[in-house]
Image 1: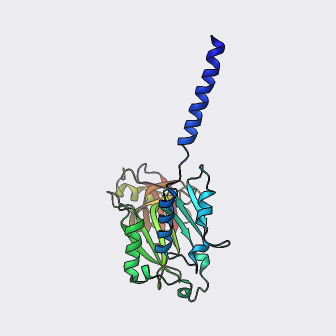
Image 2: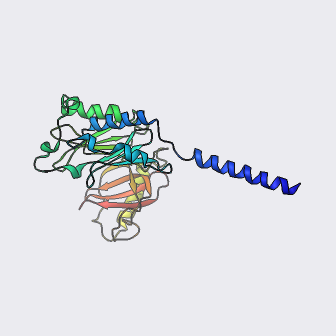
Image 3: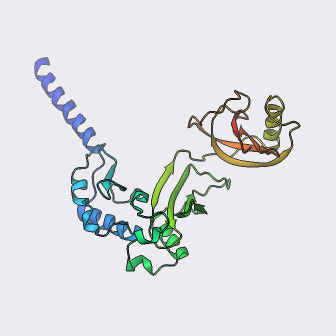
Length: 278
């Protein structure tokens, strides 16, 4: 009896493993729908190539592994890349390398009747409304080098905290409609508000500041910001500067008039680092 049960047991386990393998691989969406969404994105972002047909979308989709979460499509053999989710949604675009002349970026941008009708503000709003989820509507527009506008769309939260680590970012030129880069930042989600008060954070920061051998005395408060920052070795740990170790915290950034910043964890009250603008 045992000899008959064992082969059946093996077959059942093998079938279950195969089923788990299949469902955990994200399938590619219907290819006709996928092609349409990708080509529409290429048109909306006005990819900087003279002939869109030179982008071999079909081959890249066909060669994408089931294990991969994304479809990576080179814009040219040497420069530029587009990364799509398997449902056709854009995840990342980088085509800054396609700019032929940084002193005259307009000449790299192809004519496109669909988007050329938009003003600069209209084009930015068009990209936001069509490609960025509705909950990401805390919007900042800042200059990016001499290339154009850097648009950061931060996720709204009930605490009104600016969290650049949960956002969408894209860059458009000052003149001409195209999207140089587009990417998602998904490193830290605000799930709770501060557990200590601003006054408590100031006191903690002042104690650390006053006991640091390299700060200007006495401590004079300039401002306090509630932000997301990464740990580092500044203040209360070591004088030597080090890059963030990527562990992120919601912090009170307590800023002195000498522009030293001390990061106090808004949940635990622990000093997790700082910075200096000096």
